[in-house]
Length: 339
Image (spheres, one colour):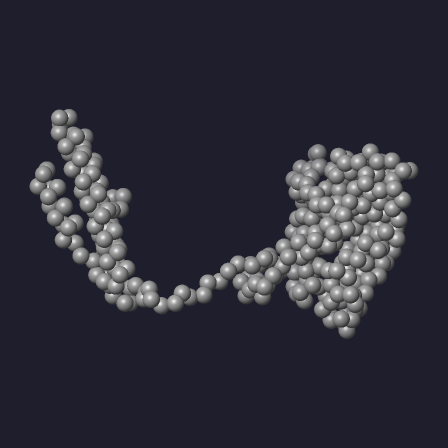
């Protein structure tokens, strides 16, 4: 056996590597998991007990010798003892590296929060899997409302109703259940609806909802808050209008439109050639919703609003196809490296 040790040791000492392939050959033969030194370890069981100690020391010496030789070969190649085709010239200047950037949806979300934090709003969050109470019932949805049907909502269970949340209004319910007015909160998050994917719609998207509950809150407070938001998010020249609408959880309710930021009123596919784009819904919190959350509607009032972060981002950066946000196309994402 001592002859085998001497043979392997001599082979390690005389080995030369002039390129990466030869270095890899050395590694496979003497360093990798299945190497000639490792095979000696497997023979330990056949060695008499009185010789095991010496045998083990000899194997370890070979292992250390191979490691030292391998490192010396690496150092030799790195210092120039190699073919120029296999190893780079270390004296050359470094190449530029591509760095990641903030996703445009993330940038818009951060801008949302920044604008509203300056006027006293905090940020709240909640689960994406919700029960019927927080997603529908507490928000005053009637039992036969279309949103409760499977063609509009992704249900996990139907009895009891457990679903992927269809809006972040469920977070507002949780806040009102656990906090006392005054309440000023933003609820950003991912939501899910059973919709066909297109340039204007997706089954998974992001919402930013706001809630303000206090004494003597009026619709005028809602309008001034949204006027402030639109001017800060877009430009001072951006126009805003409110159209009467209906939502189960607000009364009165209004859709929020702004002048199209892509065509500037000339007409395009995003604004459907009207010059106006809907960015969300709003209204005064329905008294039934306040009662469901244990808040006295005779003492307190409030407003709520909700917007799609994708829609705001499209208008903010002139993006015409919502699907680009989730396709991970590097050519698209590189346009936002400065964010």
